[in-house]
Length: 377
Image 1 (cartoon, rainbow, N blue to C red):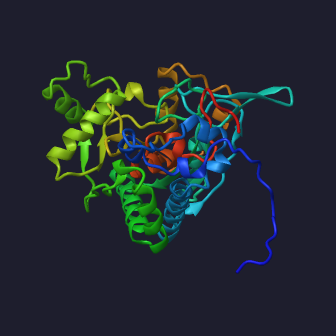
Image 2 (cartoon, rainbow, N blue to C red):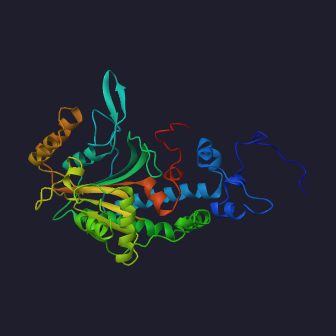
Image 3 (cartoon, rainbow, N blue to C red):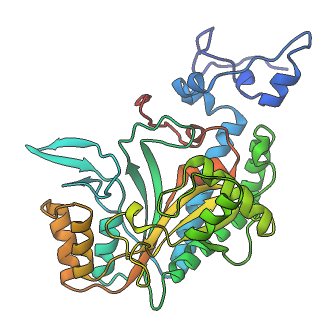
């Protein structure tokens, strides 16, 4: 029998929404529509406007436990393989990615940018004989993309490594790391409990992705051919894939390759990749680049990088990029002073969480998402 209780903090009588309402799955809401007491739902915008309340729902809370587990396994797996964790600057004197939108700010009278990736600094670390490095950190893209899979700020899971013979060494490293991550979150007791909570609300992720023991690597030209054979007349071997084409490619690969949900496409056209991408030695129209796909959507972009300063400067010139900015001057100098052949990857943590768990929107995988229409809370 309770004789006395104390109020630690008093909430208002009316909250923006009820935690119970936010805890219903869409299927439960649909099933209750014709009942005497239909269930209420809560829109994503309302949830994000009051994220601290949304985090009290079991499924949303569990999403961030899985997110934390992914970063934990990413870090531990690379640590075990002899990688060194680095932290690169996020205020830089120029763009770090050609073709990607950039946020600018005043830096004591000069213009600085928020880093679009740690790419240049990973490579300079390699030039400094760190040999194998990785970073977990924020990435900023000033792209006006209002889609369910894009953000203006996300967390990057990046690594870079010296290669001995072929860029496939980096592909295999990335594949192994994420196979370990996916196995870890499915088998770790705490993660298994969180997954069960999430999958009760988001049935699209009910079945874990099928991950083959060995990486399935498809050349870009073959990927385009698969789409063309499927009736896509717009697929072009020298143009990037659209989102719809990526999703359809994932469905075709799943049918052809033992139901796999995780695969790699390599040898992308050189004209759609950044300036630091090594051209294919056998065909200058192609590049030594690759993307990883999960459930039919890209989660990672990677490549062998230009370690030869003459090739790098020719690439800059070909893409109409001047190396006058302080960041690019330092970057090109690193290769003038000699760097070994190397390759790497950049995974988007938010997109990995979004696709692995089968969520409805990438914003559900970001604690306080930033997109073209949202910069608060």
